[in-house]
Length: 574
Image 1 (cartoon, rainbow, N blue to C red):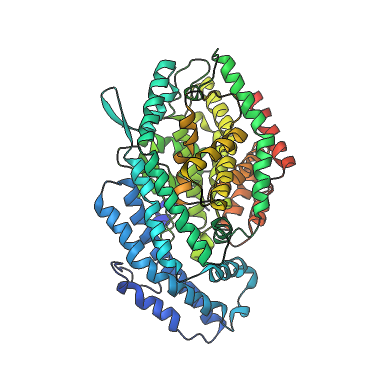
Image 2: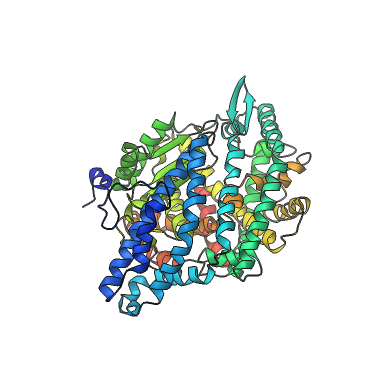
């Protein structure tokens, strides 16, 4: 029996912290850390109770930080929201870090640790030991500065607007005009967007150079030769190696690029162009108007609920719950940070979805993607420890990217015209392949950046151009747009705010294609396996979770080719 929305809204009773605690200073929470540090533990039962109390504290603090971040990104122009976020980062988190390290030492040093269920806690203990290995007190101030400075990217991007038809519009809204069937209009809006981005090019270059050197100092302090190797460990990549990342890049370049280039050539031929320009990549090749799967944010939510109801009714209930609780901010507006996310709220278990919808098909995909994350949050909300709910990105993105493809089987909710539905599916599959190339390029670029930290901004641009030549193909003509191509990497929020968190999307995209292939054969069993994998949270290794989902965690060229051929066949059948 599935839980109903009222059950999901109920906030769990706190057992360690006061029910209504205001976190307005370090002093307001310090005593709880002191309690955990000084508490005498005389049995395995008491140690497990200590773990649960610590977990509750972590969940409450995580949710407090989440709301400050959410409010800030929803309105970057609000100084109060910015101050609130910065206060937490500056005045609370630096005090938490040394306490957390001492609590980790207390845990691993307990004589009762071996009496706990090792299978249950193995992954958690592995992560704790990794945190101990990486912790350096001298990095606290550096990490604080990095956290604050990296958020400047969002504020800079949020302030970018262009004038169109006598109105000021966001770049997200402007980008939707790139689907206009009038090539002249597309070129004009493209140039307007790029001219606006050029205004902040040097500012973003300077910001990023500063972040690179701050991150390098963190790595050196922790005993690493470079930030790439430090971050690999900090992200807890226990289940694959740096070489696997390079193998992924190579597999994608060899097996996906030919398909993408063929698609670009078909587009060039269909549009009857001598040269396929960057402003020609989004328009419908048959000259049809852009897909409009929904009218506004409310319509997007209602149709997502209807779509998810066809996948599995409880998924629709999850989105309904979020709607009822005000956990959705979907429309693009001036002053709102770029991008989209599902922010898990670990205490209540009801997440928050943020995005910048402008009415396009891509917005539909973003919504069901974040909806997949939301499903993950709901099915893990009752796991005992906060750390169990904090899944690695390779798993988190599997939840979301799989829902993009699975939900596609029910997109008739958004497109009642069969031809439009075919267009939407084709666009989704072509985008999935090209996304793999972009992911490989971004990850490859970041490896180079942090292995060559003394590079200049010009050298960085030149390296990006070399990487683009490997992963972008030769069909699109960039003549006259070389400067734009050289700074395309600046469009990727992850490079600035969450370095190296990006290849996970590629790994998960492969997993999602495999899951979708299974779904087309046996929907019910595939969903059962999908849910079983998500419910594990982070209590098993990544390969084990993928196996539970009924797929492989594999980036070999042979496997990539197998999945690419499947997608190619599906495209031909549309």
